[in-house]
Length: 362
Image (cartoon, rainbow, N blue to C red; front, side):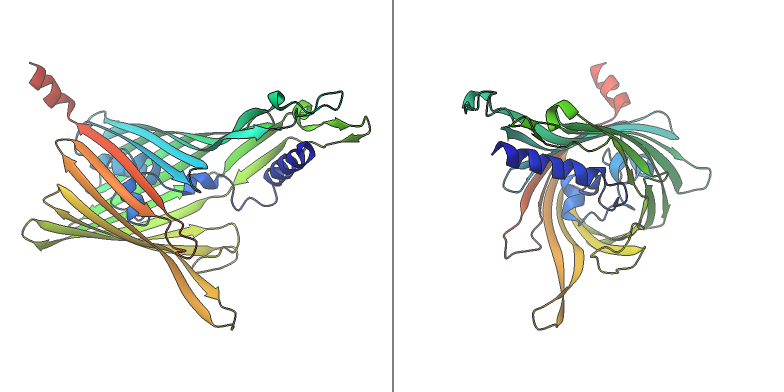
């Protein structure tokens, strides 16, 4: 058991250390935040307008209605094995500028560490089993500003990444995002260039924990300290608001994700450029109650008879907003129904106007 765990850990950190294969580096930052966005298939680049804009499109902070906005989200994946958490807040500086900050964590906790299960005399001691976590953290600091062009805003993120595998390895990373939004009539346009300068993670491995002598002759190995690179990607979005009937209104958004790290298994596969489209729909009643749908993760699958079929991931969600509080729910990750993969995701948001709060106190 001890040898198996050491081998698995060594394989994981070795794969991480391979700088020549950066395709899925920092992929936890592609999951998304906020139940509203996840219910809409992550199609919010053009329409985002709250604290979650720090993640989706910092320029969207300029569409924030009130002075302060904050939100939290919790999600669990793989039957609760992995936990994904987000907290973010944003504030209005003046009529032209906004600031925001976010923390994202994706981790697996309470992993048994059996490397010390056997003592130096060769005896098995279960009291020597400890636990560790493998977790990824992202700290986002956002700035947005309205331009002199009517309807045009721009924004940027500074990202600090911290990734940790117990006592065995850790990495620090740094990157930048740049974005813009343009609104004209009922149309919204958005662009986000994620990791615009590429994001660099510097990995450090603990040799004392990874190199274990067995029978005074066989040793486990530790990878060399290395640099992991996340290449840029471009996210484009276009959305349209429209009235439906009386107090019912709708919004439809189409987004496309452009990646430049080689062929990916998406709808439009290319090398080095691949394009992943996704669609979101939101219907609201007087901005109080919401129902949402999303389609994404389109893939062409070759069946056993060599015929090609199309698969996609549907998403669904609802939301309620009242007196500054918003509670949103999303049912997502249900694309492969044969495996019953799904996640129930909840997020809570609170927004308020500082000037009104001060007046209320007076």
